[in-house]
Length: 352
Image (tube, rainbow, N blue to C red; front, side, top):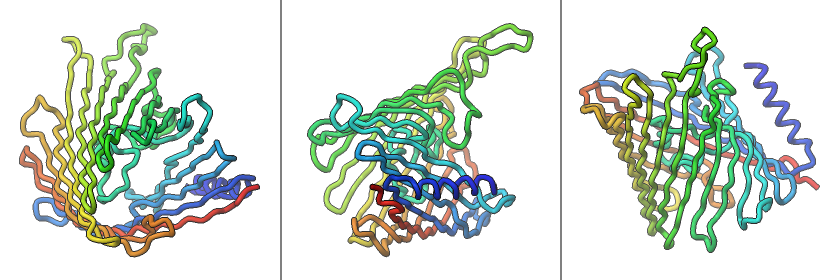
C-alpha cells in the first residue's frame, strides 16, 4: 500500500512540473449506511465509500489526458484503505479526417449503455455496473465523436475485457468490441443503444499433456443496451433496457443463458438546490428460470449546498431509501443511505 501511495504522490509531483496545463480535481463520498435483512440490522457504519483524485494534463490544443486514482475504505480492515487506478488515458483530437472526432488510448471509459456518463444521481451504481454487465473502465482504444448539427454522438472501441480492478490478470487472446450511439432528434429527447461482444477464457487450452483442446470453460457474451431519456422543464425520465446472452459450450453443443435488466429513473427538480428522485430496477438473471427475479426500489433526494462558477455541483447531500425484494422468497433487504459529496479543483500549472 505504501508503495502505491508513493507512486501516486510522485505522479502528482511529476504532472505539476510538466510544461503543460494540468488541472487537479478531488471528489470525496462520506456515507452512512444502515442496512436490514428481514428486519434484522446487518450494517450500521460511517465510511469513506469512495474518493477520486484526478489529474487532467493538457498538451496543446489537440492532446489532453486524464489520470484518476479511486480510493476507498478497506472493507477487509487490513490496510485501512484501498486504492485503484480508475483512468489513465490520452485523447487525441483532430487526428482523423472526421470532424469533431477524437482517438482515446489507455485505461478509458466503457461506452456501453449509460455507464460512461453516469453521474450517480442515485447513490447506487449504474445498472450495467451493479448487475455486472460491464466494468465502468477498461484498457483499450477507441474513436468517439459527435454527429453533425448536434444530432448525437457515437463511439467505437476495443478493450482487454478485464476492467480496471485487475492488470493482465484476466486477459485472453480475443479483444472485446463495443459500438455505441446516441441520437437527439429533438431537444429534450435522446435515444440510443450499445452492442458489445465479449469473451471469457481462450478458445483453446493445453490439456496438460501437450495436446491442444477446445476450452470447456470458454464463455462468449453478446450484450445490448437500449437507452431513452426525456427531459422537459424540471422533469426528466431515464429508461434503460439491458440484455446479456451468455453462450457456454457443453456436451450437447452450446447452451445460451439470457439475463435482462429494466431500469427506470424519474427526477423532479424542485429548484436549483433540491431535487426528488426515484428508481425502479427489475433484474432477471436467467429468463429460462422461474422465481429468480429481483426488484429494487429507490426513493430519495439530492440537496445542493454549493455550486461552482459553472453551476456544477460542488457540495451536496444525497439521501436514499433502497429496498430489494427477491422472487425466490429470499429475505428482503433494506438500506438507508446518507452521503455527503464534496468536490474541489485547481489548476496546478498554466503551461507556456
